[in-house]
Length: 137
Length: 137
DNA sequence: ATTACATATGTAATAGTATAACATTAGAGG
DNA sequence: CCTCTAATGTTATACTATTACATATGTAAT
Ligand SMILES: [Zn+2]
Ligand SMILES: [Zn+2]
Ligand SMILES: [Zn+2]
Ligand SMILES: [Zn+2]
Image (cartoon, rainbow over all chains, first blue to last red; front, side, top):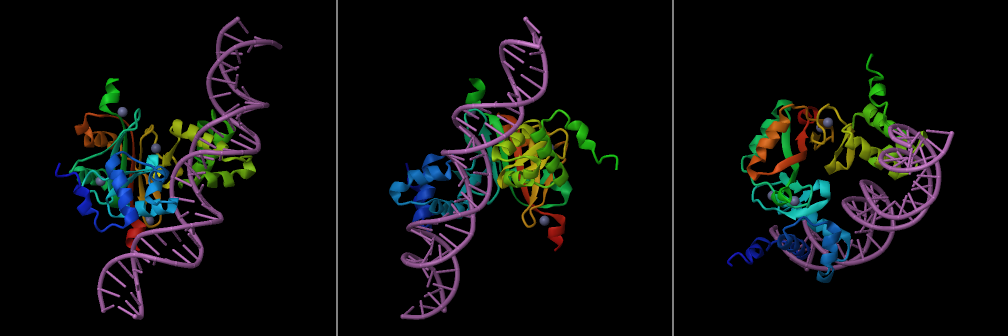
């Protein structure tokens, strides 16, 4: 129960719009689309897409949320150290999204592309899977 | 010079719309956006977005082209065996895109996510980099 | 050749995603 | 208080993609 309001402190420096968007994503835990967020927060005072997109942009920049490119959706960061790097599994059948928590991922990933003599600044990895429950049924 | 029309044979079974879209992507080699393709092929008889999207969908399905999700663009497949798996480097400065040709990639990638006991059906990997020429300048 | 079926086309309308432009306001330092 | 920067509010617009429906084309069996 001690974590019920664990986000309050962390989100202290955010502006009102940023905070209500972050809270929605945090409480949902699922990937949400910008216009769904807009509809959900009409009662909180959000009126235009731009208000949502500006908040989302800032939260992505701060690393508090991630954008999942292939589904145009945003999800709370479930890790603490991914910076601008993202790695998700997405179930092809039910759409459930999970952030990959592998502290070795960044190193492994760098190895993959090492041949190219390129400096990787960030990455976005989207793995389509059959999740456990979908694999059974 | 013997490869000038190397695509003609391979694209024989495609329909007219599919072929002209594929030819454009093949000749370009760069990622192109759907509405750019539409504009470029007006003179070839393409009039509506849907004609382009239908051709693109089919070509993606056939594995002849890939969609790069984070830039809403399509690019010719520069590999022969990636099926529905995609892996690209994208230069953050100049936007240049390269398909990663690493025959071990698929295995390495599977190892990364192995913990999760999930069956990976396909993946989409986007590595943002500084390309060689951009790193120098 | 005719039928049947699946796939592809053509066209118009509409849905969904995201940004430009500009005026105004709120906060942080000096 | 003044200044600067970041965030807001609002309107309009650009960009990306799909729905719906009528028509045509290709292929294979009868
Ligand atoms: Zn994260
Ligand atoms: Zn599932
Ligand atoms: Zn490929
Ligand atoms: Zn570059």
